[in-house]
Length: 562
Image 1 (cartoon, one colour):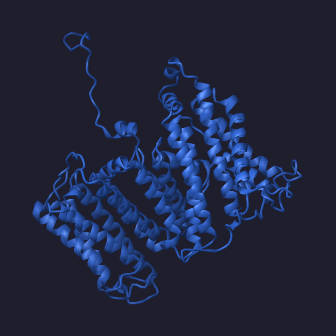
Image 2 (cartoon, helix red, strand yellow; image 1 turned 135 degrees about the vertical axis):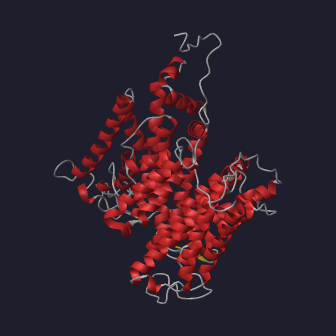
Image 3 (tube, helix red, strand yellow; image 1 turned 135 degrees about the horizontal axis):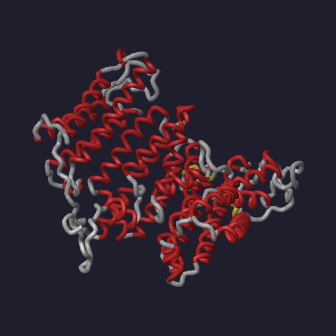
């Protein structure tokens, strides 16, 4: 129970004042020297960490005004404002004092802070204290007010535009800036969920599903044009590859309930199959150079064949036994690719050296490895590949959505919930599971064929069960579970976070996996059903337990009756 020493009106005023000070600190200099990354020495010119403070302060201030029932802002907190304000205050406190600590550590003490830094510290502390003292005003969020279709569509477009800007800012942030950004964004995202705003937006996207899907892909397509460095665009391409493979695994794990611990091997099968027929000088079939669409088809079919060959004798197993077999397949694939070097085995994969010098994709004369001009904008190599990968992702999303809503998709869900009961109802469990296994392998193989051309090389050490850098089987499984099993947007979002966070935490070196593990624990603690929970997960994790009722004919024993 919260110990209060401030009345509600005073707590709200302190929170508002702290939010104003936090935002205002971004307009003042934080340090006297430009040795700290971002050059925070100017007044009225926010840069680097100051943008995080400005955004955090303004969002908190909006929610404070919503708690005052300011006209036009009540929609921000349909489920109450106290919990969101507490989370926003916590985020402001953590990100602000982390920024102060990094400045003091790198420059040699708090004496290097200018007035803006002190204003930031006081403002964020006041925000957190005031939000902590606010009375609990949680309530059940009512249905979203009906707006005109054009108004709802404009809201969806605006949300995707803001999301694109936030993602572009985060992916381009350096280590100090990203740390502060992460500590501000994660609590803010949870606050939006607690306020009921995320659920209302989900209702909007459900009513305008085609617009929402098109807006999401349009925002992703616009991402390369927000970056000045091809390096960050390459990160975006790898995120799309990882997310597409995670969505394929979602067929096996999320819809069918099969625990596959060697799924990354199917990504490798597709990559190696495409690389062998790409015309690379390091391929044993160097005289064969098939068109890229045919290479993708070969990669998908090869993965499909391996999926059927591995699944047919093993899918009669259940639970841990199936997991162990799939884990063994993943390791066998990696070891086999290592040994096919002409010495330890047949000369096919060039052993640990892999297959390099894979030619760039060329479709109808359009060379994806060259820089092109589009509407006066320069589009580089990785921008081309990101647009190509978006097409592949769209195909996988379309396949997943159509299959999951079909008769076979409902059979998968029945198998996941209770295989014995499903078979008693006439579902051929083995055949249904084999189809899921084969489809998941096919989608992974297709993504692997594109990955081989993006990276221009394929090596066996990438396809491991667990490692510090995705994609690997452990990260793929975590992306599905963290994002939300059985959903489309869940694994895409989970994969994006699981790829981006380790990439940005490289500066922690030996503590990278520790920090990543802590982040995973926090996310799973606050969102046990996943970032984008399916309907069943919402009922299981978010609905209060209902006491078991005795049947009308049951005899309820009392102490005396017993």
